[in-house]
Image (cartoon, rainbow, N blue to C red; front, side, top):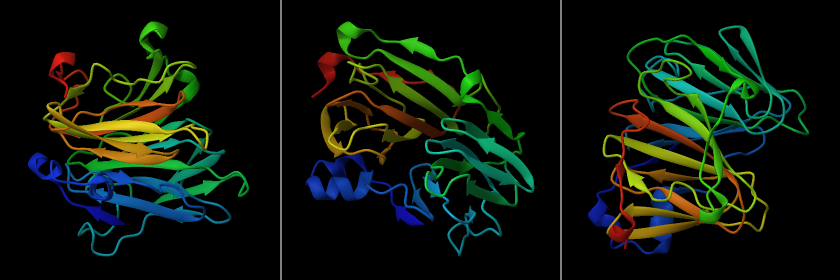
Length: 276
């Protein structure tokens, strides 16, 4: 598990491109037969990919969290963006087709990941945050989620927002997680942009062609920076940073948040004239 430390916003004003990418971009999320996780000190979020092929995988620890098992003091959100697979929680099986989700409560001791077809493996994208209360595990079926539709073709941001780990769907301590799908011809997400000082966020961009690129904007509104990103890469967004993007084609992204509260609309909108 790779560790990323928190940065003061004044620091990044001096970062060059390589330094910015090293701190805020995770370039490889899914690797066949591997668990690849990143621990960020921004609200102590853990995120990454689990890609089982011919054998089941689990999350093992050395000294990273100071606990006996991964979810001893954490909660977990999972969204599968690959082939059909299964998550086994303390012996109970949950079948996971593409874009199915799962909320896993604190105290679950054994979490196993498998794929139905090693040649078309599941790609389990996970977000995990510290937790102090055990909430029930909930399977979130993509076919049962009614998306929130917003944006319009004229502003190139027509999109559907699917809420997974969200107060409208299931209880959680501080974790929120969802998926936003842009319509063909739309490329902008979350513009006008915002910050939320009380929560950090992680974006996973996917469903992109090999040549498609996302320009993910970050930084304080008065001094923005950008990351050029490929398919299935993640951007870390500290609480003081905007998080918005545009691309050379439409795409899908998973947003995950944790921090002070679970109020989805708790944000500080940035006026367009204040962006620089």
